[in-house]
Length: 110
Image (tube, rainbow, N blue to C red; front, side, top):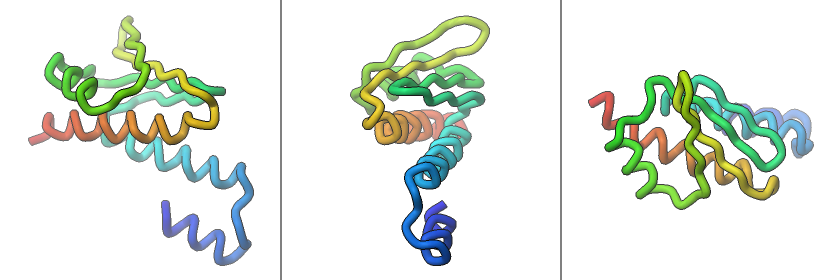
């Protein structure tokens, strides 16, 4: 993604905010895929994601130990997580959450 952003900036100059937002969302989706995220929604100051498979109790504890964010866990047919922060902080907080999730579930594969 960084190479794409650099190439676009080289060809067209500084990226406008909508283009930067699009690249940031793509980065989040790539990290989310590593973490087992099957759905990712960002609106206003809220992120909701769905995990498949759901986190084990050990992974959940590791996530809570790793990230200090105001998380809400959603239950239903699939495990979900909601994060509510100020809109200006959402992309950074979402990145922190997704990196934490990816680190917690990476142990699953080994």
